[in-house]
Image (cartoon, rainbow, N blue to C red):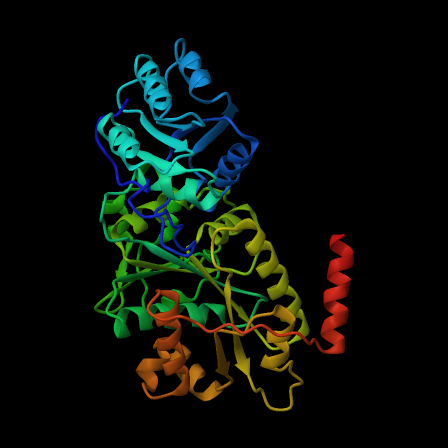
Length: 430
C-alpha cells in the first residue's frame, strides 16, 4: 500500500461540502482501478464515474464485498494502480481491514476509502497509514472522478491544457473562422499561450487564415503515433503570434484521412502537458474520432447559422453532449452570419427559446471585414481592432477560458414551427 500521502477530500472539522462540477479536473492516465463496494448506491456512483470523459483512459472494474472481498481477491492476484474500498463499519474495524489488505497489497498501489463517518481522528490515521483519500458516503460520480484523477495530478499544481473544441452545427457556418479568431484573442488579449489545432486534414483553412504554410503539421503526428511526445509535437508547431502557435492540417488529397476513435489522443495529451489553452477546429462530420474529441474537450462551442437546419443540428448536438458529459457544464453555442440582407432567418430569441439557453454570442454578417481578413490571412482584430466582432471574440475568449461567466436565462414559450420540430424529435426518440 502506498505510503506517500496525496491531496485529499476527506473530512475536516467542518462538514464536507461538494465542490462545483464545473471545476477543472485533470483527466486520469491509463491506470487500472478496482472498486469493492458494500452498497448498490456506491457501486452505481463508481460505475457512472467510470463513464465520465476524464476517466476514458482508465480501466475500471466494480465489485461488491468491501474490504473483505478485496483482501481475499489479492491473495492470489496482483493489485491494480488504485483500489477503491467502501467501508460501512466504524474506525477500529476500518483500520483492521486496511491492515489485512496491506499484507497482500503491492507497493505503489493507491487506496481510496469511502466511509460513513465524518471522523477527523480516523481520517488522520488513514492518511498516516498511507491511504490516498477518504470520501464520505453517499458519493456522487463527480466525487469519485475528482478523487481518482487528483491522485495523478500534482498537489497545488496550476491546471494546464484546457481544451476548447469548436464545431459547426452545419457546414459553411464559419466555425473555423470563429475558432481561429477565438484562439487569436485568447493569445493576444488574455496573453495565454495557445495552440490552434486544425483537425480538418483534407480541407483545413487554418494555414490560410494565419498566412502560414508550414512543412509539417498534425498529419505528421497522427500518422506516427509512436514518435509523439511533447518535444516532437513542439517541432510541428508554427508560430503565428507572440502567444499563439498553429498545428496545421496538410489540406491535401494525396491520402485518405480515415482514423480510429483514439487516433488524436497522443497529440492532445502532449499539448495538454505543455500548453495552457488548446483550441480545436473540429470539422463538421460525425465519426468515432470527432465524437471522442467533442466528448473529451473541457468546453465546447457550437457555431450555428440562423436557420432551421442549424437549429435542429445544434439541438441534437447539445442534447447528445449533455447526456454524454453529465458532470460538465452544457455546451455553449453562438450564432454566426446573422443579418444577411433579404434572407429569412430564425431570430436569436427564438433560438434561445428552442434550446432553452441563450447564445453566448451573436456575430453579425459583415462580408467586407470578414472577407478582407480571410483574403489577407489575418484575424478580424488585425483588420479592424475596434470592430464589433473583434470585441465579441474577446468576450468569447474570456468566457471559454473561465475568465468570465455567461448569463444563461431560461425561456418557457416556443414558436409554432420550432415547437413542431421539437415534438417530432421527441417522437423519434421515444
